[in-house]
Length: 141
Image 1 (cartoon, one colour):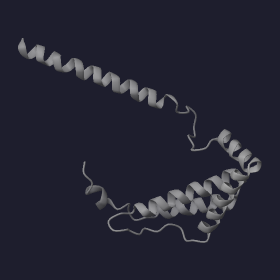
Image 2: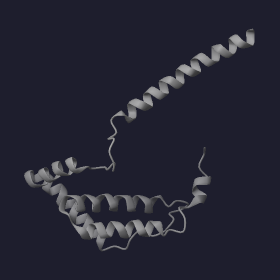
Image 3: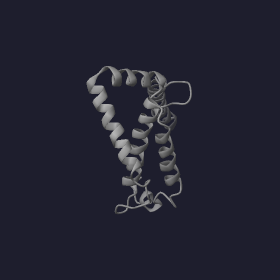
Image 4: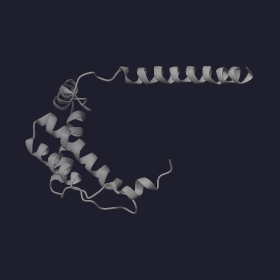
């Protein structure tokens, strides 16, 4: 009997904890758009960006800076599989930043060359021989 009451005493808080965690998870995902694709910027966001770019001098300056950065990216080779110490993270970050900048330019202006360059970056990463698995095995679990 004592063991049964101890098990119940442990089970009740555990079950309540799981229910609280499940409710928190549901609330966290409640704002997620149900439709696909789930993009960083959907069409409504892009329309707001376009309005700011055309209607505000600060918005135009910000967008012009991103366009210049995207043009600089086009002059550089796609990302390469180069480790920085034991990590490939610098190349992953570089690719991510390039894809976001080029993607914004492509979505706002319709620039097809930016889309082509995004494709190059993605194909370059897909051609990596690996993503440095030795680094993953050294991380604490």
